[in-house]
Length: 87
Image: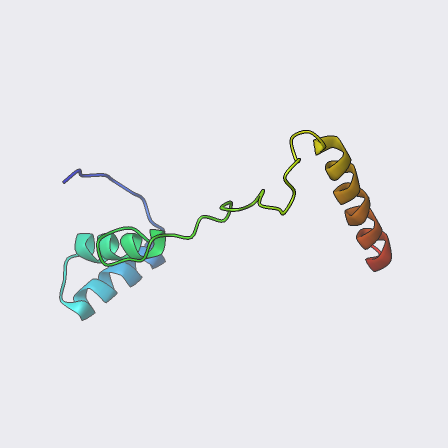
C-alpha cells in the first residue's frame, strides 16, 4: 500500500475523524472507502460511466467524407436554438 499525505481544512478533518470513530474504523480506512466509492473503483463498485462513450455515434455512414457539411448543419441548428431561447 502506498502512503500519501493530504491536507484538509480543520472542520472537514474533524468530520472525517468523527465519522471514523462512529464507524469504529481508522481514518485511513474511511478515506480509502470513500474515495473508492466516489471514483467508482474497486471490486465492489460498478464500472464508471464514461461520459464520452458513443459521443460521436450517429446513423451516418459517410461522416468522414462529409464532416464539414454535417458540422455546419449541427452548428447552424445550435445557433438557431440559442436565438430561439434568447441565449
